[in-house]
Amino acid sequence: MEHSDIFRKQEMIIIAAVVIIGAVLAAVLFLMKKPGSVAVVSVDGKETARYDLDEDIDTEIQGVGGTNRLIISAGTVRIEEADCPDKLCVKQGEISDVGQSIICLPHRVSVRVEGTADDEVPDAVTAQRCGSEKTVSHPHISGADIGFLHCL
Image (cartoon, rainbow, N blue to C red; front, top):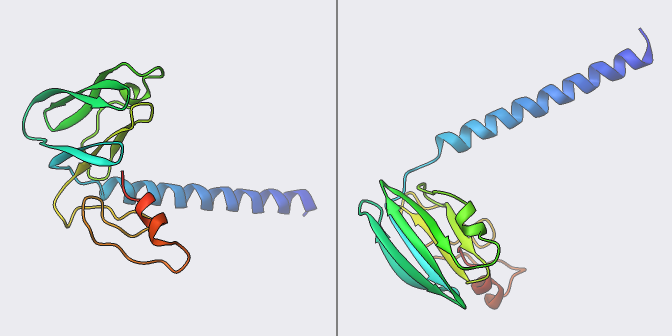
């Protein structure tokens, strides 16, 4: 058996392991998705509105320096129009699952989907549940940093 044959077998084992781990992680994330019940709108870090996803809504959000048109229909949320230069918020499409969000950086607008308290996804940095006041202190992050790193 040549040295290159052994190396190829090892490569194939590593590639197979990475593919299997990726498939398992994708399956877990897919199975953990939960439909949301509320769209929470924030402008410049401050919550400005909450909308029930069961209602059809067409409204404008006045952001910092511009406007975004929010549409809620059939349990999904999207930014239909925006007068920001890049329109990335429009291109993000529809969201409907707990923890998903749409962000418009130029206007400092965020829209996140929340569910019941049991459905909320904790923020990985602060262990804060999005939409709640519960936080866990971290020995290497100051209180000011935790406030800055809140869930969008």
